[in-house]
Image (tube, rainbow, N blue to C red):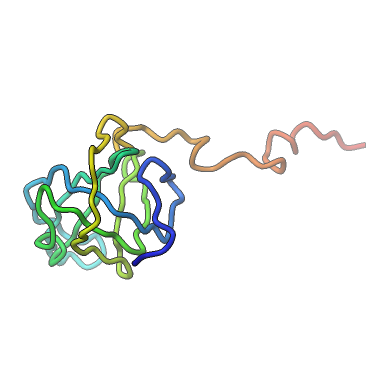
Length: 141
């Protein structure tokens, strides 16, 4: 059993080491994309997963595309949230895993779709007291 399970509604743009259980609500048709690093082709599918607190798009690459179908309950271990075009999406990366789970997920909340919310600058990087607006207000004697 995975410790420290989080709920989708608790995810932030900085969430790392995400462990959760959710239901696959929908799965986009797979498409072929070229890597920006080496121009190799990869399979990609976006999957909308949800629990009782919210929903988020999960990006699956290559072999992981085949690992889930609509209606499945999945367990994600060591995922991370990434901003893509100003919206949050969940990724597995090199160190994350996804597998079928026998944990029951009841009603899901797709109204609170974390991937549909535009993340503002203030949510990505809170201002610190050392920002330029404070330095500019100082006067030299």
